Amino acid sequence: MFAKGNPQWPQAFYPMQRKHTITNGDILAARCTYNSSGMSRSVKIGSSTNDEMCNLYIMYYTEYRNALAGQSPPCIGTQFNTLIDTLPVGNDVPLPPNPEMEQQAFGSTHHHTSPITYNNIENPDSAFSNSILPLGSGPDGIGLLNNEYMYQEAHNWPAKNLQFGQVAAVITDHNGNVAIFHRGDHVWDELTFDYYNNYLQAKEGPIKASTVLTLDSVTGVLLHQWGSNLFYMPHGLFINTDGSFWVTDVAMHQVFHFSATDLKKPTLTLGEKFVPGNDNGHFCKPASVAVSKTGDIYVADG
Image 1: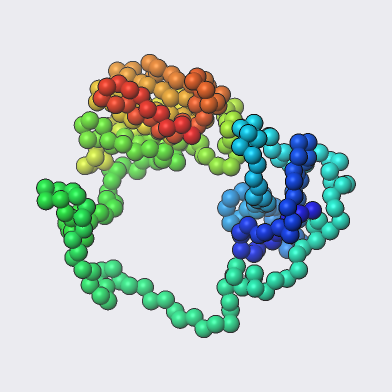
Image 2 (image 1 turned 30 degrees about the vertical axis):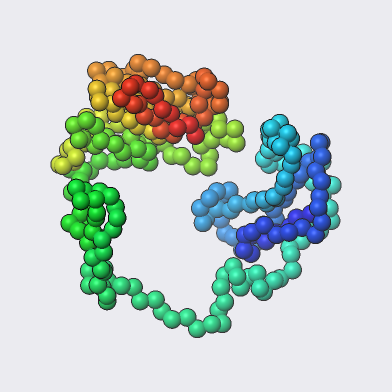
């Protein structure tokens, strides 16, 4: 056993007492011990404050030629039951209390702290200076800190009570209208993909709702919607000058082109459905797509 940590202490890399050499065939195993005696509900693995997460990060180095060989697949869960019986004695014994570490993690409770007084942005205690910023915008090449371009939320936009899922992309078309690409009832969370980027919810089928909505930029009125039963996990959206749409789907690992006259079937599909990869015929969670004036297609792969 060469590493042990406490998740309630400051998270950092701590030096080892000696150097360890890992050779071909060695197995690195880590375990986490939880005390759930005070819990009255089930605790699941996840990234929220109601979940638990266990990680043990080890910093290592290797020769460059070894790194080129790639990494071994991880072992998630208990896949080697015999390891449980061979773990060293004391592996699940907590580290002794460390007041200095705990004070750094939670802060001291023995020092007087003054209450924080928040400034009123409408009537601040001190005025903001109208500084000149070298923004390089506008005819004179300068911008002012206090100017007429103050952004505020348009509370009456959109015009009707539209329901969106996770919004993946927002873009304007050549007419100035706003197009929104959203995920409907599909949610990207820790259960969406496995470690190898395979989509795990394909059996649920594509999103049934329209995923691309075009709204008037001024009134917020819904002008057009499409994209039902086509996508699983929308991400990137680009609208060409001819009104055609380019989209990416990270679940399918594909890039699609739809003509302005037919939005039910793509005219071009790049990548293999549900198959991630990094060769010339595959993508891995393509995040965005754009097309230049010369017709060159640019894809930001995930």
